[in-house]
Length: 288
Ligand SMILES: *[C@@H]1O[C@H](CO)[C@@H](O)[C@H](O)[C@H]1NC(C)=O
Ligand SMILES: *[C@@H]1O[C@H](CO)[C@@H](O)[C@H](O)[C@H]1NC(C)=O
Image 1 (cartoon, protein in one colour):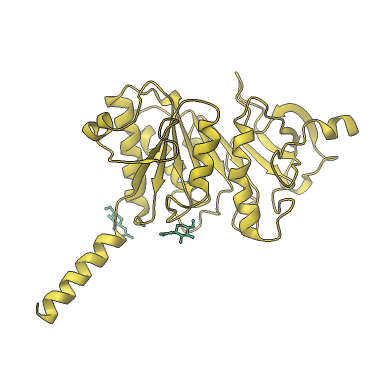
Image 2 (cartoon, helix red, strand yellow):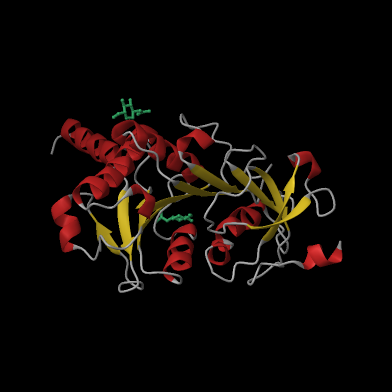
C-alpha cells in the first residue's frame, strides 16, 4: 500500500470511529447478567429479547459513557428489581455528535411507538450528567415528530449543559424531575424541571470527599426512589438559597415517588444517609 493510500485509510477509520452512532444495550430480567446489544430496527428487535408489552426505560449516560459507566448498571438494576421492563441503555463511547445522538435515540422511541405500539406513557427516559440534556433533546424531538409529549423524564445530577446545544427544560416533557447532588462540581444549581430535588443541600453528599462521588450518588439513590418502600420524605423550599431542614416546609411528598397527581412544582430539600439504605424517612418531621 502506498503512503497516500495508508493515510487515506487511517483518516477514514478515524472518522468512522469519531462519528460513530450510539449503540443500544437491552437489559431485561431474563438476561440481566448478559445485556444484549440491539440494533434500532424492527427485524432485529423482533429477534431480540425486547418484549413490547413491558414498559421501557431509556437510559442515557454521561457524555461518551459506555456500558461500563456505573450509571448504566445502576439504572438497569434499580428498575429490574421493581418490575419487568425493557431497560435500553445508550452507549455513547463512539458517538460525539449531539444532533446525531439525539436523532438516533428519538428515532428508536418513535419506532417503538409506531411499530411496537408502545405508548409514550410506558416509556421513561433517564439521563445522567450530560445525558440529562440529551434526554431533554430526545423528548423534544419526539414531540416535534409525533406531536405528543413524553410524559416523564428523570434526570440525575445534570451537568450545566453549557457545551451542549439543547439544554434541558421543563418544556421538554410533561413532567421533568431532577436530582441535584453535586451542584458547583460536575452538576448545577440551576432549576431545570418541574420538581428539582437537592438531597443534603445538593452540593456534596454524606460520606463523599470528591466531586465524582457526590455526582455519582445521584444514580445510587434511584433504586430507593423507585421502590415501594421509598422513604425520601422531602420539604418544599422557597429557593436554592434557603435549602435546609428548618427553612423549608416538610411535605408528605417523597423524592421520585409515583403519584396520581404531580407533586407541587418547585425546589425540594431532603437528607440522606451515606450508604444504602439512603432514606432517612420522617426523622426531621418528628424532630421539628
Ligand atoms: C467507559 O467509561 C468509563 C467512565 O464512565 C471510563 O472510565 C472507561 O475508561 C470507559 N471505557 C471504555 C472502554 O471506553
Ligand atoms: C453533527 O451532525 C450533523 C448531522 O449529521 C451535521 O450537520 C453537523 O455538522 C455535525 N456536527 C459536528 C460538530 O460535526
